[in-house]
Image (cartoon, rainbow, N blue to C red; front, side):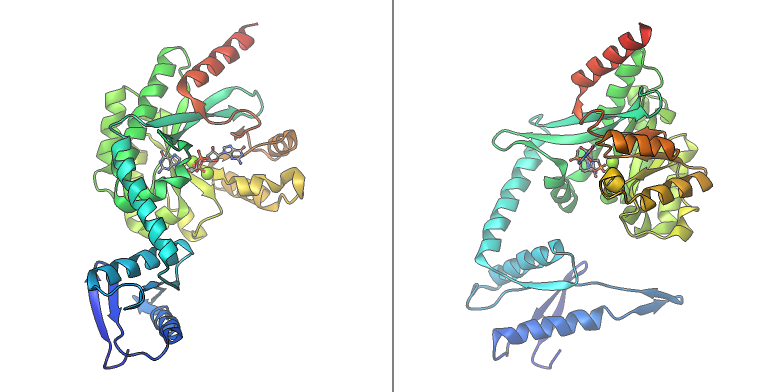
Length: 362
Ligand code: C2E
Ligand code: MG
Ligand code: MG
């Protein structure tokens, strides 16, 4: 930066740069690019090469605002857009972003109320033994029954819940619902059913997580071997040593650990064998090409990797008979997908279980 610029740490990992002298707005873009470049050059810590990425938001006075609070707020909004666009870039504030940030605020306010208003629901997607076509478990998937918007899918509100910290409460609620529901099914005779629950990065960083999970299991009366936690690669790689410790604690109590969306995140094979995991979930982006473009190499490789590492394997997003046939042939014996069932409310799931039981008794 130049002597006439001001650089300040704003809090946490946020910094504010005040550029008081510039000729053209386009010069700010050049400056932002220079800043990003400087920051992303590698840093060596303990001989390890580390990288830092930046997301930059820019607001301009007097065009966007004249008051410092508002300028900073607009720059912040633009920064979030830059983050959404995949980090390591910059964005100028635009009034349309303002509309979006208003909407975000609105969504955040209603999400805060959603829990108490009983607007959140857990759907369950059955997981099948691909050979016997029997239900062996389910995955709990949250939905938001919004009074005006209808059924909102998790991808539309989980990121916001993570950013605002609401995910801790919401995630704990899902865990409770899922454990209780699985126990109900077990009490109704489906004794071997397992339940899989997705964890977000923020929940995984929570120091109380393992205690919360144990207490929830105890509260529901569910034995730990029937609970599976789904983690993503990126979440585990965030702090490898802490992840391993936490996973060991969970796993030593008998809880299963699965890596969700395997192969789509940032992970390192050298760490994979240090993680006490039980299962890999083949992401549906690797299942989709089976049959369609007949591009099966990734799916086959993940199955082989799981076998070599003596991990269980499950495929997600099975939509066609062809995919089912191929997976079975390739030694993947568990799966879920629209071919069998979409995620459904608990009641429908119960009906499905009963139907399956009747059929098997014939
Ligand atoms: P995921 O854990 O990978 O869940 C699988 C997603 O694939 C679900 O989307 C499911 O409905 C969808 N799916 C299942 N079978 C098929 C299929 O045959 N074809 C296609 N095209 N899609 C299929 P959903 O329910 O919209 O959830 C999206 C993501 O939201 C989940 O991905 C998970 O990462 C996250 N999520 C859902 N519930 C929770 C939760 O309680 N906590 C957290 N932290 N994340 C959650
Ligand atoms: Mg999942
Ligand atoms: Mg997945």
